[in-house]
Length: 581
Image (cartoon, rainbow, N blue to C red; front, side):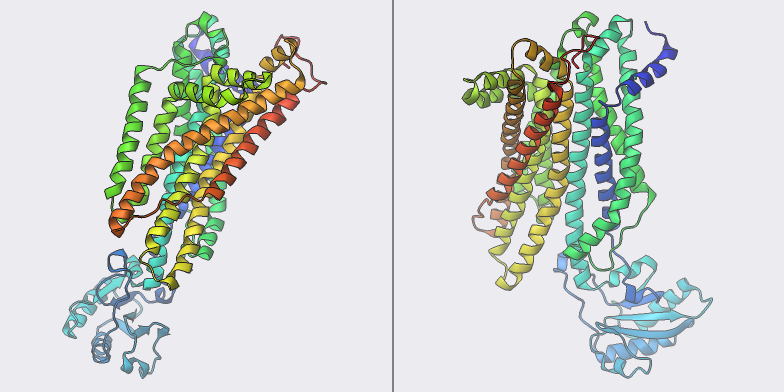
C-alpha cells in the first residue's frame, strides 16, 4: 500500500510528467469556462434598465401598465391635456419638489410649460427634488397628490423601479434578447459541461494501464481515485480561472454584437459582477471532477493484473446503473419531445432543448450498446479493402475511444439540426399569420438568432472534435508502431486512421439526427396546434451539410496530421524504454 503522505506528491509528479497529454483537457475546460462566464454575464446584464433620459430625475410618475409580452408590448396611452395640466399643478405643490418635467416621446417639455399645456404624447412626468429632501417622503406625498388630481391609477417610481418607464420598443427588444440569451446560456452551458466531463473521462480511460501499474505497486482503489481527483482539481482550477478571465474579457464585445444585431436596446451594456464569474469557475471545476469521478471509479475497480492489458482498446460492460440512467434519460427525452407539443409558446424553445439534451445524455450512456451495430453498418461498404477493414475493426474494438470521438460530432450535428430546424420551422409557422411587411425584419432576426446559437454549440464542439481526435491519436503511437512492424505501410496506417475518423463522423452524424428529429417533431406538433393548421418541418439542408462537411474535415484532418507525425520515416518505431516513439 502506498503511504498516505505520498498521495499528493505522487499526484503532482504524475501531473508534471503528463502535461502534454493534459493540454487537451485544459483547452476543453478553459474554453468551456469562457463560454459559461460570457453567457452568465450577458444573461445577468439583460434585466430592465432605467432609461438614460430619466437617469437625472429621482422620481417618475407613470400611467398604469408595463409594456410586455402579455399586452403585445403596447405603449400606454398618453394622458389627456386636462389630466396632464392637473397632474403638473398638483405635483408642483408637493413639498420637496424643485421642478416638474413632463416627458413626451421626443423629450421633456420646455421650462416655460407652454408645450405641456397641449398634453400631446405625455406618458411620464419627472420630479426633481430639492437638495436634502427626503426621497421616500416626497414619493409618498407625490402619490397622494396624484390621487388628489383624479388619476388613481398612476404610479410614482423611484430607484430601480424607474426601469418600468422604458419605451415599449426597448421592452420588446430586451424581451427578444432575453430569449436569445436564455437559449444561448442553456445551450452553451450544457455543451461546455458535457464536453469537459467527457474529455476528462476519456483522458482517465486512456491511462488505465498506468493506474494498473500503480495497483500492482500497492496503491489502493481509494488512492487511485485521490490521484485522479487531485489532477482534475489542479488542472480544473487553473483552466477554469483562465477561462473565466477570457469570458469576462470577451463579454462586452459580445454585448455590442447583440445591440448591433437588434437583440438588445442601445442602453444595454455588460456589467462585470463577481457572482456569474464565480459560478462559471465553480461549474467548470465541478464538470472536470464529474468526468474524473465517472472514469476513476472504473479504473479503481479493475484488478491489478487485469489492468495491465490494453484496456484503451477494450469495451466497457454495461453496468446496472448505466442501463438505468441511460434508459431513463432516453425515455425522459422522448417524453419531453411529446410534451413540447402542448407547451406554452414562451417555454417551447426550452422544452425542445431539454428534450434534445436528455436524448444526448441517454445515447452517450448507452454508447456501448448503440455503437457496435452502427460501426458494423458504416464499416460494411469499406470493409473489402485492407484499410477499410482495419478502420472498422479498430472502431469496433475500441468502443470507448469511438464513443469519445463521436460525442463532439453528435453535439455539433445534433444541435445544428435542432437549432436551424427549430428556427426555420418557427419562422414558417409565424409567416402564416404575419403581415408581409413585418416578414423581412423577422427573417433578419431569425437568422441572426440561428447564427448565435449555432456559433455557440457548433463552434465549441468543432474545437472539441479536433481536441478528442488529437488525444485519441496521441495514445495510439505504440499501436501505429506495431502496425508498421506487422507489415503495414505508412500510407496504410495514415489511411486507416483517416477512414476511422470518417467512420466516427458518420456515426456521430446519425446519432445527431436521432437526437434532433424527435424534438423537432414535438415542436412542429405544438406549433401546428397553436396555428390551427399543419406547419411544415423545415430543415435547412445546405447549412446542415456544410456543418457535417466541416466536422468531417476537422476530424479526418486532425487525425491525419497527427498520424503523419507519429509514423514519420525520421521517427524511430520504439524508444529505448520499449514504448512507441
